[in-house]
Length: 109
Image (cartoon, rainbow, N blue to C red):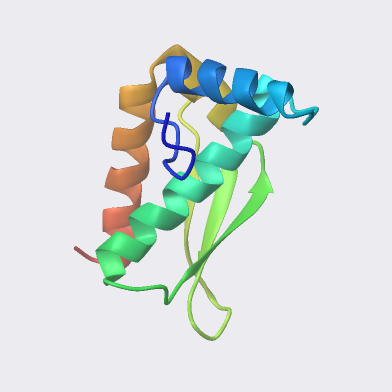
């Protein structure tokens, strides 16, 4: 398992949880999925901008804001269901596709 890689699916999450627990970290599945969503969205935004110019900020379980260089909100990413965690658990591929699609609309690519 590549520890630097952002988990892409539910099995990756379960594997990462097992690894973290074996190292003494007390993290829940939902906590890891929330962090995965934020890290993954930041990677998507960085990829679309060819660099680290914008910042992803979690507002609540259904919304991330993308902040520009000046700190101004460029746009928001909204969960399709009740939360990003629920969306990931339901269908991780659709979850990532949604993050990409919404990010492309905000970034303009």
